[in-house]
Amino acid sequence: MPMSAPPPVYGGFEGQFKKLHRTAWYPVEINGVAQVFDTRDQAEVAAYRALMKHLFGDGILRDGEKASAAAAEAEFRKIFPGKGKVVEVVRR
Image (cartoon, rainbow, N blue to C red; front, side, top):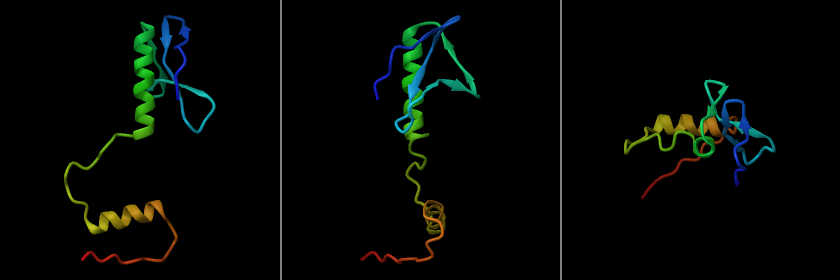
């Protein structure tokens, strides 16, 4: 989603980004406080980074470690709660 030019506010520029599933523009916030940047470029970079963090979260959380079967099952149950059917997969 292209970003519009950061709007000037009192004291600088406010970086804003638009979530893909929403129509409103969201300000770049740290601990719930909208940030004001000195330059338009700083605001635009911060808005881009905030959008990427919104889309991708913290990125790859596992760094080469293998997930245990219990952790995989718990993650599956969190994504698909209440289905009740378990399909056992056997690798050959």
